[in-house]
Length: 237
Length: 303
Image 1 (tube, helix red, strand yellow):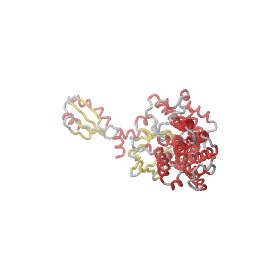
Image 2: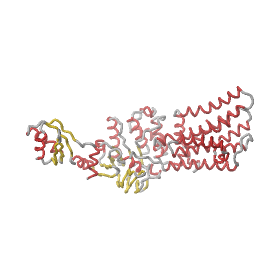
Image 3: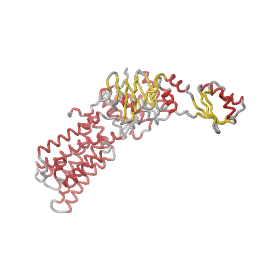
């Protein structure tokens, strides 16, 4: 598995799938609302109240939701209705298909998820903190998009399964049990961001966070490719 | 010239057997894969196109396994039954993407050439979601043919296509077969297969029921015993007269009709009106009671 397996045609089609569907507006709405909210709170309140939106809403919710939308848009519908056979009935390496689709999902997650977090954090001041949060979001977005791509390759209920991971595992249980930080993509990202700014939390060890993020990313994309290698069409029987 | 071979191929899903020990060889020319809905045609097609692993047996193209072997797609063009969900692309963009995925040296020229072959040059600039069923079908065929494959597999290509476009598609497939390509299409409609394929393979309930020249299979089908229900002014008199006919195998009286089992359809059909007139019986109704395609197939399997 390497970058040379990237297929420009698959990536272009994935981008068209992302931009050509109505979901795209939903994808666009998240960053707009996030930045709008931060601007509004900055204008109405004094002090650092606006920043609170980012670690409490932007990072744990908007970022993974954007990653879910992006990953499921580049792969989900085609797997669901079987029309991915048009892409797969070609002499193209299927890991390459997975990598190309992941690159597009990642780019969308960075542009519509991580970048707005940077912009919003800059509005609240403290550029070091803003950069740290952006790095955290970029790292988490990378692992999220790979994980959600893998989920899209195995189940028709990818959006629900991914949402449950984010809302129940990372959100609800993550708040109740601090140990879940060791198995939470968002927390790994924050730990890496903590290396830049102390204002971010320190939930796990840095080397662990780096390795874990890397492993989820590589295994996620590889797994999606492997599922595509065995992609089956079921007959009506 | 390419040959697709199924060697004792079976496929089951859990404890449902979709394809049961099918061996067949598909060579150059047009072959029709005929069977009722649910017979396992789509499962067979999926195995032949590398989108399903056989549970047992082998599926090979020119000796190479098809499953998990993306290199075989250089020689295969696949027209799936699935709808195109790339509605946001124009016909030209879609065909071009297929050409690019095959890394054709001159993808643009190949795209235009094949759009011309399927007669879709003029609407190629419009989005796929504005196309009629027949147009989508032709674009799918263009996409499958753009890399000039030796084998073309089409799953129910005429479903929902209007008669005029159907003629056009059939002419196209016939030409492709005459060029020495291996063309296999599936259908559940006898007439479609009859008009296009010289060679047919019949599958029923996951089994390979018959194979060969269409004429021979058609004869098998038309020569089979057929059941008719007749209503007339005097069923009993007609029954007696019918029983004397060589073409009639059995007659049974019902309360208001007559069931007749016929061995030789042709001479029965020719003699019935004369027979009725001779015995002064008026025929009210004559209807085949088992003319469904399923009963034809059932006969082939039981044979």
